[in-house]
Image (cartoon, rainbow, N blue to C red; front, top):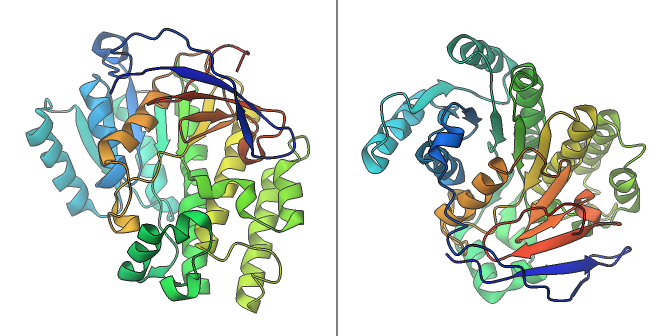
Length: 359
């Protein structure tokens, strides 16, 4: 895919409405094809939830860039099969991709992963937190129909007709998508700090933007960058689960469509900002890969896995002076997380990236 133009855009301080003013910047025609094997040859990377979908696509593209990748998955059999599949389909050398079992909801499996990386490689350069679940039982046919009709995109879908959401699923979703990513990052940060170019990429979603939530208290907590803490994030999630159990999600202004998934990604975006602030030597960002054809949406997405994975890879391979604590979505770099407050974006045809301070 060839980059045709870059549009510099401004974002209204108090809204998510974008005003465009075109500024074309020359970009090499082959820029989108990141292939720097010599530069990345000695790097090591971990991708969670990588036995299929976007995670597997990320592993393949990074391995082709010469990076040694640790592919992780809950199911050992599926993980090993994924590694063999990559060797055959991509022609990867032995040891280019290695498997290690990991269930991000179980701390007992995270410590062995950290020890494995320390023993085998001595350090870690890049962590991609990709493991995630939907947090609901979805009627596949009804879901596809909502996509075709545009109801899902327009926010008019009747979630009760499309999915069933219960407390146990909501709790599991938060434990996987948010707390799992948090546990993994905390365990691997000591190894990342030994790298010359440490990065954490949290795979998020546009559903994690604050305009998907009507609860003013929640918006206030997440948009208050100066006073935001991990404890405050946990407080929001605890309140969400309490209201979920009491059946008061709608009356309290919580999202009705994929409620737990939405909150997990909002929390993940907030955690991204907190990590970036706590560890200024790390480059920590979250990214929405787009509406990709994966199992979580019954292959009803718009983008092929390769393109969604490419967006994650581009972010992972940004230079050391890249932004940190940011959320990238829909070809845009959105500083200041989901609220876009006092921030800006750069739209690029195939990948988001940062240009100094003039974005």
